[in-house]
Image (cartoon, one colour):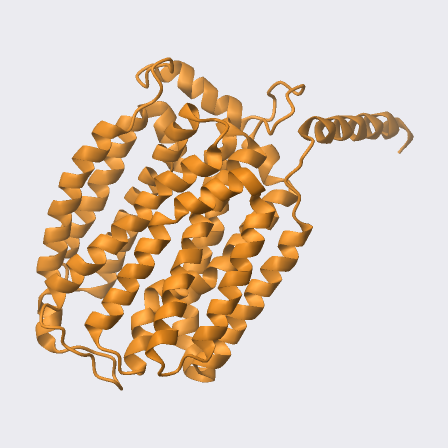
Length: 387
């Protein structure tokens, strides 16, 4: 994500989008011909993830230029597209791979061989559909008319260097460089909260079918539950972002953590209850969408419109690590401790997030911080002759 920000300044938003979207489509096409797991991991998650990361912040960056005072709403609207997309493609992939709604084996959790034989064709269809949708996305993303054109790479490159340098105008009461932002307590708290609170949601979105298969739910039911949850995940990101503009990050995120805690308890005691499982999954994914609306919006508010998207790319590290932790829970903790204990651990992580949120303060006087640093440096220089 930080690389995407630099590329956008050097190449322009359009060219960066073309490059990123091309990588996504190409990775899906190449994956359809790969038969080695290692090669698949090197191509699809790596190449496709690189492309998705390049594309992710570009619309947010452009949207903030149009509405600099409504960063929460703009972030919510834009990332809603990222959430609604999986809702649609959840049905498409299920229809392509498992059109007959074959059930997985309860013990091995594996499907019939005919299901797996449909996977290569699915990736090819996805590559084609993503390529066509990419053409529309490239046309629709643009800057305000009074913004300098992206082809003027010289001035934009200078702007990137200015943002990355700590030598900007010290009289501005805002974060002036990435280096300054990364050294703050607020950044560390944002990353930590993103990791702790989103670990549960990212685990659930990846393994809700694995859990449901253990309860003997059929594939179409789980696909429907996941699709509804993904729709709520995407569509209500606008709601979360708009609420942040009105009530602020801390209040809205506090409400999200309360709702998420209730969902975790439902999952811990869901067992074989169909309704409980469906409600817990759908509302959990609804809460996950809130993370992707609130954290970019708060990055813009805390670090400023110019640095907000770049700082969010560093906050996104917490999201990335949380996704990897989900694999650990599925492969190690769940087999050892069981579903209930695993979800109670997630509940503890959510509670720890609430503690960090209490310590979090987004009212930063950047000018005063720089003045204190300058005074401390001056006193240190004065003391050197006596040391």
